[in-house]
Image (cartoon, rainbow, N blue to C red; front, side):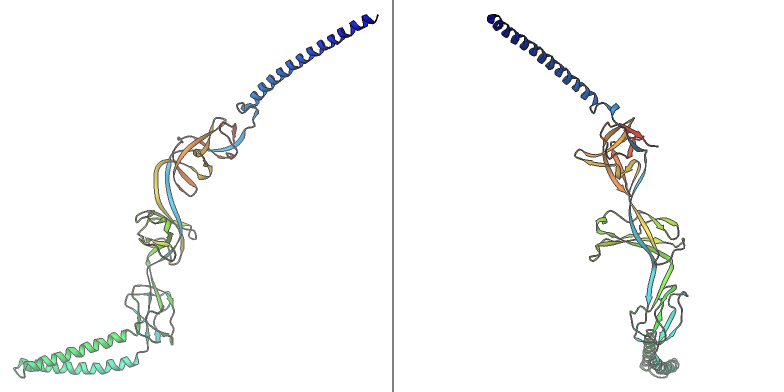
Amino acid sequence: MKRLILLLIPAMIFASCGSNTGKVADLDKLKKERSELDQKIKALEGPGNDSTKKATPVSVIDVEPTDFVSTINVQSQITGDQNTYASSQAPGIVNNVLVHTGERVTKGQVLATLDFAGMEQQIEGQQAQLTLAKTVYEKQKTLWAQNIGTEVQLLKAKADYESAQSQQAGLIAQKNMYRVISPIAGVVDQMNLKIGDATAPGALSIRVVNTDKLKAEANLGENYLGKVKTGNSVMLIFPDLNDSLKTTLAYVAEAVDPNSRAFLVQVKLDNKHNLHPNMSCIMKIGNYESKNTLTVPISVIQKTSKGEMLYVADGNKAKAVYIKTGANSNGIVEVLSGLSAGDKVITAGFEDLDDGAPITTMQ
């Protein structure tokens, strides 16, 4: 009996081991199948399958050939082409003001006078000497015509008369130095004199402006030197008048101001638009122009290690396109290569896109 029991025990152990081995094999097989299935699922769910991705809403624009103009925009001011201050040539006290602000004056017109009483007395005294010299000369000339007297006497009388004339003219010129005379024809724009004021040469006494010919002036930073030139197209915009004017640059300074690090540009105006000195306006200088070129907003271009890139809508997918750009102005850039007319450039929603990502166009 004991011998039978001992024989049954090994058989039971062997049967148990055989059963466990089969289970392990089945388990390994199932795990392998599951692994292969997981790989197939992963492949189907990968980036190549757009059906499981959510489409990104985007906005697009159709790029078409257009005329591109690059402009430099700067604040400018209208001033008189002839805008000057009139002042006396000698110091003195103002005794008369002959014009008022807003009055139109002519070139050479006396605007004010200074006290020159002492000069008047000298002129009167010299006038008497001039009259005497003239009388002596005329009598001497009459005698000489009658063969009376000598030629020397005639020449001396003539010299005395001419000398008296020169002295008289000099005194009158000095008297005129006590007058404020308008150097140009125009309008009295500013009056800084009143009777009793003391003034001197070079003082900003009376400003006269010729409003028939005006100019717009602006200062450009030295970084624009060489980028603008005389004859460039200009658009002047007057916000207060709700008006604009097309013209060209008439003058471009050759040197940069050492203090402001800027240089002057000017536009000549004929004042057909009711303009006034000291008005402000926006000067748009066209320094580059290209006909029939493609343009896009600068904001849609992304800088990458491969160059400048943007996205276009290719059906219901986003397509990365690398481009070469040219000049830019006011947020618009010229596209030299990479795009074709009719391409739909994505302008909104492109920030998180990848090449080939699904998109839907927003209306």
